[in-house]
Amino acid sequence: MWSSPNPVQGVKRRLTGVVRAGWLTDPGRSREKNEDSIFADPRRGVFVVADGLGGIPGGDVASRIAARRIGEALSRDEGDGTPEERVRTAIARAGDAIRLHASSDPGVTGMATTVVLVLVPESGPYLVAHVGDSRAYLLRDGRMEALTRDHSVIQELLDAGRISVEVARHHPQRHVITRSLGHAGSAVPELRFVGRRPGDRILLCSDGLTTMLGDPEIESILVRYTEPMQCCRELVQRANTRGGLDNISVVVIDEPPGPESGRFKRAGPIAHRFHRQPF
Image (cartoon, rainbow, N blue to C red):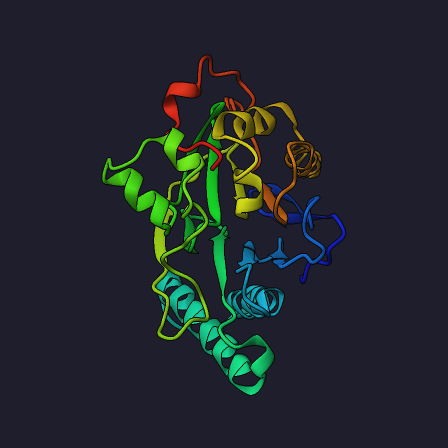
C-alpha cells in the first residue's frame, strides 16, 4: 500500500493475532515541500521510510522511488533468496532506479535519499535495514532502544569520542550523512535481525522527528499512547511544536500483546540510557 501525505492507519491480521500499524508524514513548519515518503503494506509486514536529501533538487523524487521500489519488491510473494538477500537486492535496485532517473533529467542530477525499513514476517525475528540517518527504534517493556546507528559524520565523531553530545547539537556538519541511496556507487545497507516478543512496538522515522525530539521524549510518547495512529499524530505534533524545521515521517507498528506484556509500563529514570539527543 502506497501511503499518501494524509494520515492512514493500517491493520494486519495474522493467525497469531492482529498487528496494527499507523503512519504519518508531514512537511513540518519550515519546508514548503515534503521530500519524505512512506511505503506501508501491513498485510505483508513491509514498512519503509525514505527521506530525500535536502539542498539537492529531486529529493522528493528520490525518496518516492526508493520507498515504492523497495516496498513493492519486498511485498511480492517471490520466495527467491533469503530475507537479507531480498532486502539488499531491493535497495540496490532502488538505487539504480534513482540514478537512471537522474541521468535522464538534468534538473535532478545528484538526487539521493536515506531509507530505513522493517520486515515483520509471519514468524521469526524482525529484519531492520537502513542507509543514512533515518532511524528505527524498539519499545519493549516500557523501555526504548535504538535499532539503527546513523551513517553520519556526527555519529562517527561521537563514536570516536572526539565530540560531546552537546557539541553535536550545534556542529556545522550535524546534517551531513556518509551513506545515501542514489549517489554514484552502491550504498551499502546495514542489516540487523531483532528477536520479537508480544507487545513490541517499533518506530521508523526520518530525522525531522529526531532533530526536534530527544530519545527520552520519544519514548514517553510511545509509552503513553496505546493506538499507533494516536502515537504518530502526537509525535508529529510535538515535533512541529518544537519548530518543525524539517519534514517529519513516522511509522508505528505493534505486535499483539501477550498476557504478561509490559509495553506501557513506566520504566523509571531514562535519560542516562540514551546516547542520542536532538541535534
